[in-house]
Amino acid sequence: MDKLESEIRRLTQPVNGQYPRPWMTQSTDPASSRLFIVGMNQASTYDTRTVGTHSHFINCLFNRGDESGHQLYDRLTGRPSRTRANIQNLVDHLVAIGISDVIETNVVCYSTPMSADLRETQHRNGVMQGREIFDKLLDIVQPEVLIVHGSGTVVEMNKLAGTQLPRPNFNVAEPISHQWRNRQAIIIPSLAPPAFNRWANESDGHMDKICSLVAARLKA
Image (cartoon, rainbow, N blue to C red; front, side, top):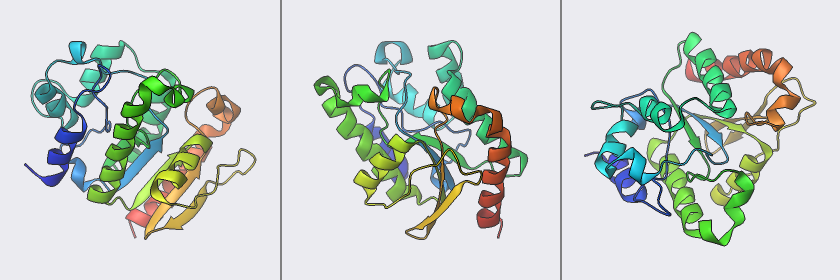
């Protein structure tokens, strides 16, 4: 068992009846991922009673066995949320230019219906665990590029990781690129409604520009 899997097994033990979800990915080797797409936190709860055993959950995360991570998500949710569909659109743009080693994650890897719910006392332990998961992912995987979406995500990252990332600007046509700890952070508006609705009409063109920045870094 490699270091990433060992840490993920430790950090995704159930909290408040759910398995904290560290990522979505199509890769069978998440440790080799060069790019993270980072949001605030996920809305879809992975209820332990529905997911199954923790070992099964881990196998799904690493896309091995009889159910992949995406298949598990589809089984639990029935259909993708609008946020998930928007993230998948960005992933599809990246795959189209030959970049598929992507982890979709959150700065707080713990589920609540709304990000504002993270402030509630009942979620305190889950939030602490979710932050530790993301911090450990950064430390072990060492991605070369982070695509960070949403002002709340930037604020949380700046607190957690000691970054000084600028907030996204809806009025700027170009994605914001920021160098941090030998990584490239690309800052974009949120992919989650309702904030996404403010730039939905320009999103495909914006994603093409994001892909150009990513390709310049990863294909150099």
